[in-house]
Image 1 (cartoon, one colour):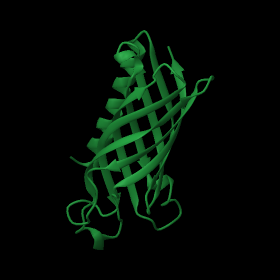
Image 2 (image 1 turned 30 degrees about the vertical axis):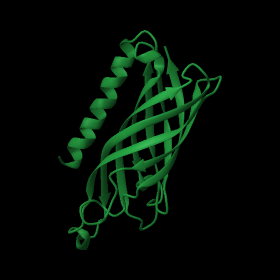
Image 3 (image 1 turned 45 degrees about the vertical axis):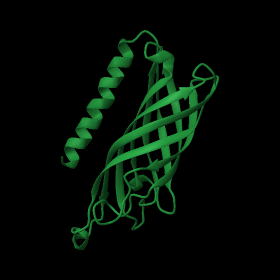
Image 4 (image 1 turned 135 degrees about the vertical axis):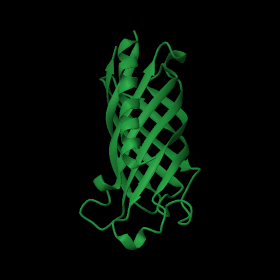
Length: 181
């Protein structure tokens, strides 16, 4: 699958979930920014959404969609490798009715690195993503929330079959503005 197809599939997933959330009687839809730091490598920044519904396990199961890129982080005005992450994830929230929640989840998606110089065309640039994540989520008394977590990429780079810049361990912080219905 080429990069354009992945982008369109990701946008389709995002908008289909937004329409499902709007049809539901009780949902939370959070949209915001995410920053991610790969251990010993790049900062990546982007956008993220968090969707949950009262009708699906009392808002304990959350769907996440994120787009992250080093283009908005370490590669901004530098010669760092430009890499993009398209992530779809499911989280299970413990204490879902409380403001402070603990979560664990699985993420999947698509990774692409753009090394720009044709000399690197022999190296792998694309990979599937699959990671396990655990962290904390805090809902403020106004419609905002913050999430912090650590994750491990089960598929990580070796430079031969998968991109060498796909490191196994990363941490992330996300800030959301919530639309509640």
